[in-house]
Image (cartoon, rainbow, N blue to C red; front, side, top):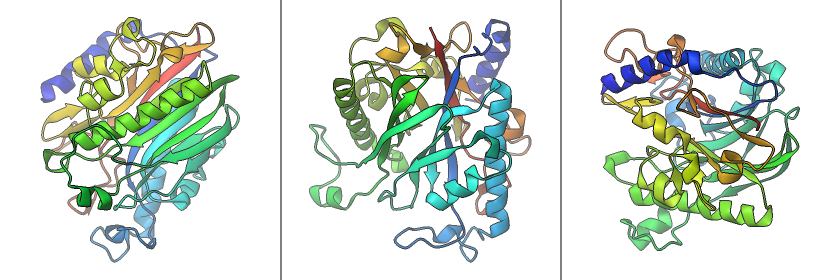
Length: 354
């Protein structure tokens, strides 16, 4: 499957001459699974023991500080590439407010002036979703957490008793004004594929997001919605294509549908995560019709002649040698500290006045 990765890289090089310059009025909207951003202190009720100084990862203050510096350097590198900071950046796998405070205070990104929205969720690992935003760009109006439930016609594998004890990440929703227009952002980290299971749970998670998105469109006609997250599914999987109504082409996006720019990119060989030699794009961003085909105002921009999304995968984020050469340079492997970044590459889109 590394051939797919090479093909995506070759295609990106081939299309550089077609890539449009980032417009002056553009905003960058992105997502990054930061892979186990834990501090060094135990949070009551969380299974954070591996990320304590005496835990299996020997998670010391020095390692935590390097993790923060590395993540901040990624955010800064993206700003240098695009000529501007992300206006909005969704995050997955953050432990609490403290790690977000420490991250946004890092000198590498302090100039961005990021603030954040975060709610504690019942996930058994103690990891949540969050949203970084720049008040200079985005005016926060509303936020809430969407908990997981089983109130659906989906047939679930879990028994009623198992359903009552099931815990996972909440979906974060944030609404506000960006460029003078109403926007809403969903940040999700859908249930895992552990044991090659959980498709029903991910479909339900996508359904929860979709139902709330339709309520937001009803309450705020014309609102521009962005759904982002580590979906633990590829863009063509049922959770994204059926339950979130993700469409590959903008011309096929009808009322109640979402445009899924990373669907075409995945088919063309791009990837944001590698597992057992297979590349996936679980780090997905979708936009509703109002943002994909706007009557006026802001809309999604092309990244090249054929695509509308970006996977940020420079050499410094990539393992350069050994068994895992060519894959994202992660923080830990088998308990060994690699001083890396994440097992996912960040993804993003760019919007501008159409």
